[in-house]
Length: 144
Image 1 (tube, one colour):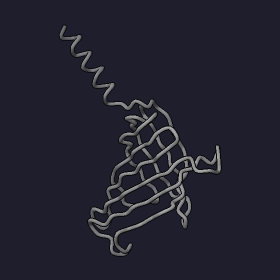
Image 2: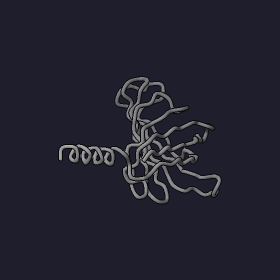
Image 3: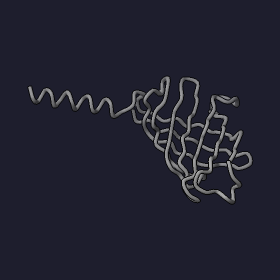
């Protein structure tokens, strides 16, 4: 009986630790449509809030946007910011959150989602590809 309880607890832990989406990779691009910062870029300090809006594209399928991204970052000091990013896609949303120092290349953990991405887990890698307007390549690596 003790072995059965331990095995059941292990299965429950394994199921709750992983997301419900299944493993996979999503590769899309974005174009920044709005970027605001609560203070001048040269005077960024703790408490400065940065907001971004993006149009999301899958250039292999269509020239039209497939969704949108919304990012809010709060600067912790003159180098680090803590960000929450929500990517609204046709069948649900993916949420990533974490700290970053630069928007040229960064990775954030995926902390959840809605719709088919309900309870998503994994990582998001963002690579800047153009500036004015800013374009980025987004790679969502879903682990479960």
